[in-house]
Length: 90
Image (cartoon, one colour):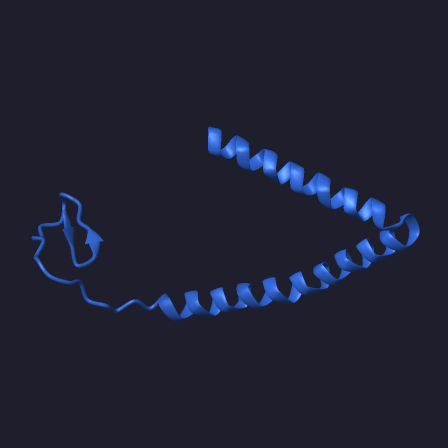
């Protein structure tokens, strides 16, 4: 049985009523704060990782030439294409 936005056990005598439940949710503000913190941490850590990745690709292209960077791109695109084909066919 469902009453007052909670499951009611057989030991409690209550009747479910039609309509909306009371909208008093005390956890919404805590959820929004934690969610904002997670979003902030995600964006602050992803930007340095992207910069490090791009610097590494630049280093590879200077040491080994643009041919290697192009091959890495082609192999990555081929691998992603294979994953897509496998996902679509399953």
